[in-house]
Length: 78
Image (cartoon, rainbow, N blue to C red):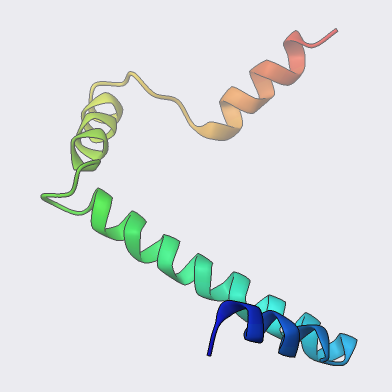
């Protein structure tokens, strides 16, 4: 089956079934994205060094809780 045939078949679906299909496709993409993120930030992954840097920064007191940072930004807004 070609992409064009799939598009034609999708265009003939009732609206609720198109919505259901679109939701499924989005979830499929998210699942693939999640798998890639886990792979990238696991030991040996290309982003693992960033995880280690963040852990070091936290241990060295170079980080603060996210909510504290948000509160500071809210105060500095005009």
